[in-house]
Length: 266
Image (cartoon, rainbow, N blue to C red; front, side, top):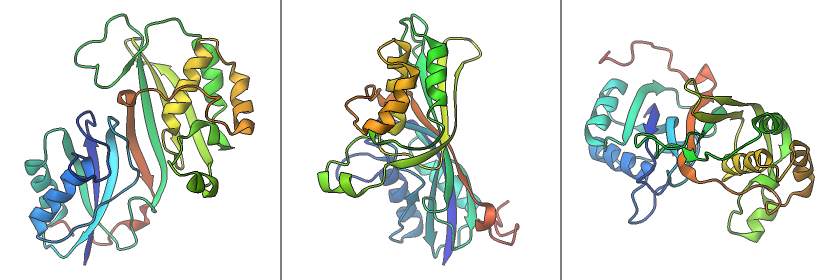
């Protein structure tokens, strides 16, 4: 058995999220269908995280195992030849049996983009939330800094859809760093967040809360209060998905195969 890691980029606009769904186009479904076609095996593809409908990625990570003799480079070329152009395999490499895209992940970086100009260019509308109205960006930066650390993010997460599961799940998460910066052209306000893992809708709720801070509906100090309340109805709205992108996933380096020449196609 051989093991492979894929770095995947995609435009999530036309897909119903990452996870396979019956009779609906998804990122995982498209890639799995091609892998099964290439290998003639019932390949299972695991991901570092399940992005929701409309969310994009530059550095999603997937992993699968196979009996195929194809090299990593051959898998990359075959997948990119057969996948829709909205999904690209940015990199492929053979890894050791201990690697799993989800369980081996040690951190993830997400980015959310707000377009602050009056008119969104047609090449950007799929990838930003348009918000041209006044915002107190310094207050938002203060608020963003308060996300860093280990906190109970129950106020910033969507329900699982099951009251029993909601009670049993842990909503404590660790955020390593955040920043709120303007793009080089000054037209976009970009929220970058790096953490160990994230709850469903968590980043979008964090951004919605920062917007409420910027609008004066909340103060930066209210974020500390929200941790104690554990009530998602008290935080800001869940902003639309199109502004969100999974930028990269961090993994330990111990997964790599020992032979750097294992990809015979290179």
